[in-house]
Amino acid sequence: MVAYLHSITKNKGDKMFCYQCEETMNGEGCTKNGMCGKKGEVADLQDDLIYVLKSISFYNQKARKAGISETSTDDFMFDALFSTITNTDFRATGIQERIDRGFELQKEIKQKLLDNNALDENNLPGIATVTPENLNDRNTGILATEDEDIRSLRELLIFGIKGIAAYAHHAMMLGHTNKKVNSFVEKGLVATTDDSLTEKELISLVLRCGEKGFDVMAALDMANTTTFGHPESTQVNIGTRSNPAILISGHDLNDLKQLLDQAEGTGVDVYTHGEMLPANAYPEFKKYEHLVGNYGGSWWHQKQEFESFNGPVLLTSNCIVPPKKTYIDRLYTTGSVGYDGATHIVPKDGKKDFSAIIGQAKACEPPVQLEEGTITGGFAYNTVLSNADKIVDAVKAGKIKKFIVMAGCDGRHKDRQYYTDFAEALPEDTVILTAGCAKYRYNKLNLGDIDGIPRVLDAGQCNDSFSLVIIAQGLMARLGFEDVNDAPISYNIAWYEQKAVLVLLSLLRLGIKDITLGPRLPAFVSPNVLKVLVEKFNITPNTTVEEDMARLLK
Image (cartoon, rainbow, N blue to C red; front, side, top):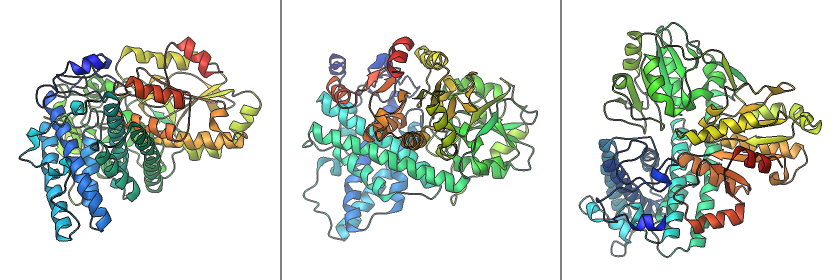
């Protein structure tokens, strides 16, 4: 890996280098175009954008101390960071617009600091002196940090911060913010430019990122549950009706609410897709008769499922796959996600106009049915802990011997069949706790129940990994365990992108050990950094179903 990195030209503009996702080329890094479909030009612009965000963070840290920071800056920061997550904004124009806006904000904040005598313009670090005119002269890429271990820790911190931004953005859309989280994002970004920080100090910041990740997931849970109610155990239809329809994918529940309100009474049905599946379990969404179920599976099936759906598709966040020409004319994006050729919908006065989608849907054929039946969801902490006595009794009676957390991301590679095989091979006295799109590897299997307790308890979206922690802590406390690491619960986590990185850091910050991670370990974790994680937390890569089963069921 070290030799591979040194073989890449480090001069800006010669080659892209991106290794932020699990599917990065050869498990090392993408150097021409991304395996996700991202063009090298966009990857370079994303590096530039992150660099500009570091500069804004430097100034905004000082502005916060001077009491002159603005909410608009936080809005921009979270959207901009979110746009660089894997499978989010594929448009060079979209990223460039954010760079341009970033420089405008940087200039405004700097001027306010000067006006308030809160800045020494003659004593600025290099990151604070970047301008539109000299940006092209800066090496903004990942490989600008030559020390492999420092680079690894910096990127681990940045990727975790991207995860924070994604969840904070969704919470912000519902009116919920956390100033301490916002401040940490700026501190973390600036820290990645500070050559005086030691590996130990960077590791501490990485774990603090996990702490703030837990806080931001709690804030998003509060935003979702106070707005839409607590998820309830729900049988979600996976068949289709005969009405024309709209498919909504991604994660933003506020977008779903606006779409349902505008589509009501039009004769157009709405189906969820991918990570929007858990919306069907919220009481507020159950009020809409035209929200009729979930269509298809996880994000990487889009090309087949979007085509067979026939109607328009709305992407509300990351997880877009470069679309086929056969349906791009009925593909819509909004928020941080974008793709050239798709119609991008921007808000006006905080509202989004989805009339074009609804109008197009009316002229489309109903979706082709892919499957029939139902899948069960809605097992967030409120539902599970309301039935804690029943679960605890099953554990004490020996009917449930182990809980396996199988949360995280799905992906395209064949080696992810491992997670289906693992779930199928689990003994009948085990219960799977899941969240995120990883569940699509086993949530349609007939795994049965234990005394009426489903063997797959789906807490919701990837951010609802927060809910899994609350569930684990609540159940284990009732069972008399002071340390969750001593309890009958194991972790077999799948990852793909940066929100999963944040979830992992949150679990580590909570002191959870012996996590099995796969299907491959992150390319951005250097051997020495991995050694620290193994020594401190005993993180292990997944191997075979048989070997991992023996270890995780002990």
